[in-house]
Length: 376
Image 1 (cartoon, rainbow, N blue to C red):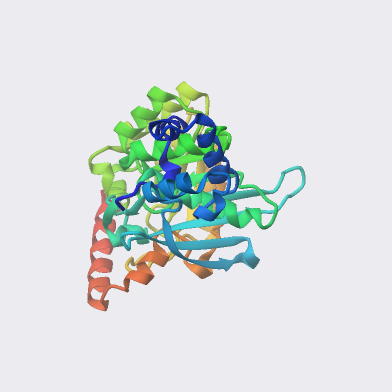
Image 2 (image 1 turned 90 degrees about the vertical axis):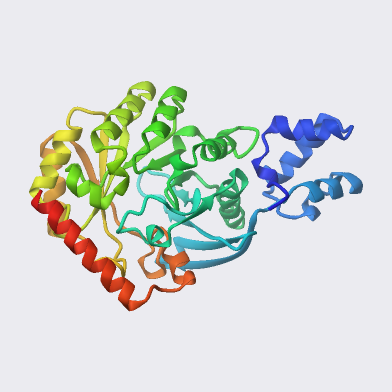
């Protein structure tokens, strides 16, 4: 990783690099055309450059920071999940979800990308949390996941329409690089996606939220809520012990006020744990009157938990209770279950399953902690 990724450079930095070598600014535009227009990954794509400059550029930068990539399709090819190996051997995942046109709604293609290798938050229903935290991704490593999927869509004559930072890792624990990647993706001189088509998700890192409030970009903000009762959220989102849910929602509400954009609150629904009438009442009380939308998402089964996804009748009742309280709510259908498309599942599979003893101990601990939280 001694050479930085070329896609992590700003246009100004690329012009400065050229200037340092006595090259004129139009050479930087030629590189940008190859990098962002063709999504180039090799020196062969830089044919407009003189051979000496092309060699110098390749010596100084990596044109692609993603190594070997395995892709698994499902949903009749509408969903694909990629497992990328980085230069240091770390594994990260990204997902492409295609949505065909329906009625007045145009077709969409959404990439879900990772911001870290592993995750330090440790939400127990998430396979990434089981992996632990390895390191933050560089800006180019984040952006190159998007370029990977755009190359795949180029072959279909399609354009990526949305990007969500909802893959492996907590984006606002890697704030500088995530925001730099978001700048690259929304810069008309680079990827050129509209800011409103980009979503940044967080489990509730308040300093990162405050940074977004100050900048007030037009990105969509998604908060991984999962529970409004503090004792239960301590179990489901351990970060709640550091940044309590009330503080998180206050910061998210400030973002909504600064941008005029509603905040999405994500709730992974777990049978008998956070899908009770008491949980619906707590979320309604927390979000009523705010510029907010709740997404209810059935949990993807994870081996190390004793839990199961909420069944359809409980989901419907929960959604109805929130709507009756004036909170806009949708139930989201999971995609890619057959290929382990939930965060971290492919990487965990490649890393090797934990021992049966470790799984049993983890399941026992989670059952004990969740039972105590439900009594609180």
